[in-house]
Length: 92
Image (tube, rainbow, N blue to C red; front, top):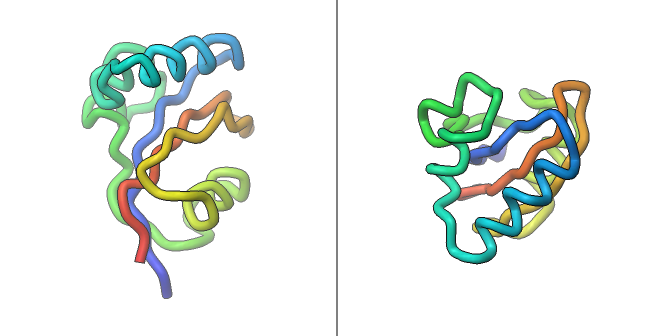
């Protein structure tokens, strides 16, 4: 079974996610932005969710992590939790 390691930033609005994504594109550190803005408890680890397999996260999240290019910031992705910016660190 494949596994992946990803980090994310979870915020309440699409506009907030887009603003953070622009800051990252201009050179802001993803981990620091997660610590500052993310509402997820993973914020303390710079948004790092550790290693997980398919089906352990909600479907929209899984589709990004297991199908989109790694080391690229994807999003905003809407789930029932809010809006995510997702970066897959590695996938095997």
